[in-house]
Length: 287
Image (tube, rainbow, N blue to C red):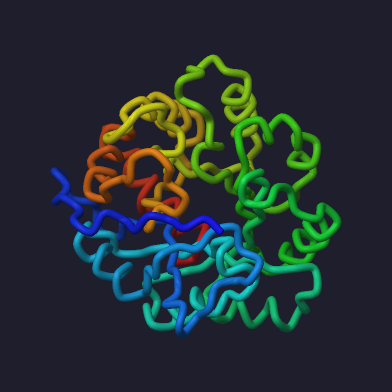
């Protein structure tokens, strides 16, 4: 089973301050495994990245809020994420991974405890597409809660699942700029499809995961044109996140302070930055 590198333990001080109310809309907690075991069928084993370290990072970077996204290494056991939300006392919201057997009562309980969406993974190296019947059933049931669905997919999957995505009736969020490949340029077909998708008023996108988009090494500036284009295309439906602690990085581990500096290159306009970091996540996650 593959192991992951730990995050950079020494983030730099960002050159500019995040605005008051800024939200890291994509981060994780992992373990500690002794308290919150990893899923037996996981595709990777991360180093522990507990709640205390996430809070310390957010305090250091100046992020007031965060959205803790359940990752595949914990499977459908959302306990670590729910524990972190509870300990955050209103600072955090969550996105869960659930299966088709979850009851309405369990969904209502997750809602009460701060969950605002579900995540489905389509990425091949993390197990590939979910059971699409389960996908359809879960989306139908979360609609009454006002939740959204997060779609973790590779760029080519936007083409493969275009018809199914078009049928979604709840807000849906595309992770990591659709994991497009920066070296293929802005004119690549998957990115054109992603931009077309953003015309759908239910579509949101996270301009994060620059290290997954980039063809190079830190500070991942080749991701900037993609993020800027997406922000301009849908300024009211974009989100940003660190993706801390950066699981499954095979190239160059990001420095989270540098990612904040990169964010300011993504979005040099202060008005758009306020939407990206404060207004949009507050609206979607109910802060």
